[in-house]
Image (cartoon, rainbow, N blue to C red; front, side, top):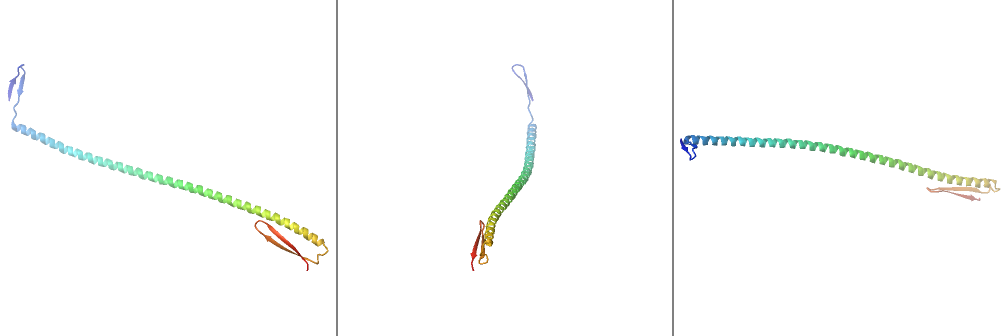
Length: 163
């Protein structure tokens, strides 16, 4: 250890260190660096583990959300399908009801028209029979009738047969 003076009168202290002390300090510093690197490695490893765990939690949460979404979407599709089927059934039953009503109305109109024609022919037959009964030759001839019924009309053929 020595002391020197500068030009300005300031004191400069020069310290001469022992080589053993210097090597000991260097060794301690290296040891601290090693501990820091060990601690740093541990910190890095801990951070990696924490990041992995957070990622696992996030993936688990996302999976749960995706499954919940899938369940809700499935329920909604099923509900929409049920509503659509209900509307289709209602439309089909309404169509069938109208169709039955139309068929019934058509059959009633056909029945009325055929009945009306039948009544006309029957009245004509009554008129002919009445005139025939009043006629003098009622014992001389016979009346033979033939009836043809089709979907659109009713026909009667009356023949007078003389024996």
